[in-house]
Length: 168
Image 1: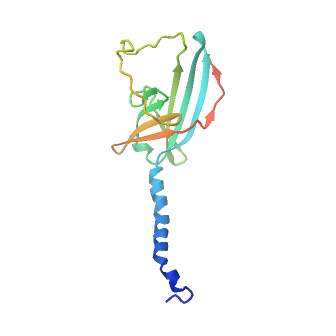
Image 2 (image 1 turned 180 degrees about the vertical axis):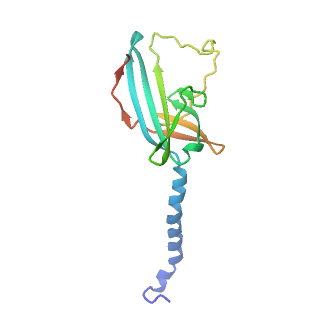
């Protein structure tokens, strides 16, 4: 049947066939897992103003074919949580070429040592219920809903640090 292949090599042909099948199907599985990905993460420190206030402005750009159906939920930067579904400056959807994008911006204000924590609901800090930050390794964590399921995207690092700027 195979004149130049000896009988010992024919035993391994079915295993080779399985290997080729796995190699063909693996990219399809990886593509499905990477429908939403991070393409840009910038940060810019700001300082000055009243009593040497400090803040950091983050900008994250996500890209993928599922962006139009994606519902942003929460952005975590350290222990700072932002409810993206109720935020006045909702994440902006757009396009990069033909691929849909989602841009999320958030400014985190850092307290100075002389400032007292202030609750936005009028209660004392001990009475207010603060969400417990999730454990993750990276700069930020974005929680979103897609097709009725909750997904997370960890932003491992800032891709570009912009020059620090003073408050106006």
